[in-house]
Image 1 (cartoon, rainbow, N blue to C red):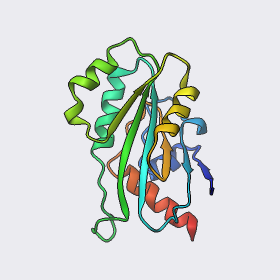
Image 2 (image 1 turned 60 degrees about the vertical axis):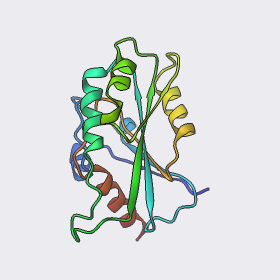
Image 3 (image 1 turned 180 degrees about the vertical axis):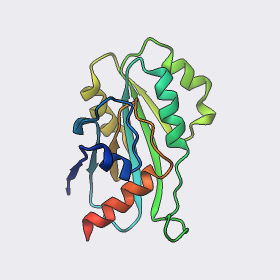
Image 4 (image 1 turned 135 degrees about the horizontal axis):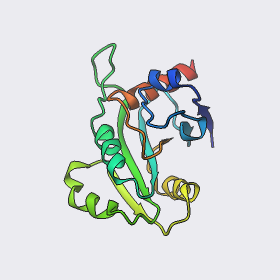
Length: 165
């Protein structure tokens, strides 16, 4: 198994990759990329975006809508990229604010979202469950208070390709 971890710790680095964090000061623990499996970067890539959440419904709505608005074309060539798709693995950590009910009522708006629920065990346990359920060959962790730009996934694909060179 091949594993590469990239930690992004500055706001400018986040902005380059299409991130916009609502935290006053972003820290590297919320911004890792973990590549798993034997997929050769540069071939096709399928991302799993793993998001743990607990009682964050208002900002989670914005987070999910931004992820659903991803542009999967190469900005430079205007052709479809080798990024073949993505899923959003949302792990609800026992929310009591109506998060699951809202998701059920609006599921047609979120075709990429797969929802899993666990009893409140914290974000680390939620991320672990998300990794277990993920189908992608590349996993991206974000927190539920992150609202990304429309080129977020394409920027990650480009960064992975540059890292291979």
